[in-house]
Image (cartoon, rainbow, N blue to C red):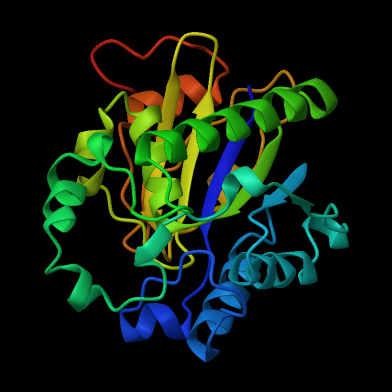
Length: 262
């Protein structure tokens, strides 16, 4: 199955000021966020992308526009982005637009921290965190299957979304209960990498904000692709075993650990 790069949007003024933006319109990237998105586009320049799918919110669309602006390998054009509402931010209801320091005083805050699977955000527009995870997982798995049908199992594609959405996707990929997803950190414009297989997903990278992404270039057909060791600027990886098995197109992990780079 293909490899999906889960990209969080670049920083916004709401992020910098500690405000829960949610679905508030007009929240775009700040100068730092634009620089982050441009830097990520350059890091991805060696990686062929079969598809780009984005949240409809402005901060994600602006991040996606920066990714599309930089050509791929050999000057190839990037695919036109597809918008999917299911990758949109959690619907925080009455919490939307409020400072995090004020929300931290609410009784529900502790539940969000320790037992998010029990949380439904207040107000007519509030959704449950379980519902948030379900829609995001369904969206990514459906797009992943579509990419596989059209471009093959070695294809790489990008989903641009939001912090809590990506954390919930990673929790699913790692086989973690949603109640443990607050242990995962997803920074602005970070890349987290998942490869789905018939038996299990493999989480190849988490919260990578500066590592070399050339290892994500699909291998040539009929050749085994070595998985380079993480360099000093590479983001955290989860199990080189999983990386080796996933990039070889297998569902099985390597018992005893992968061989790494010769």
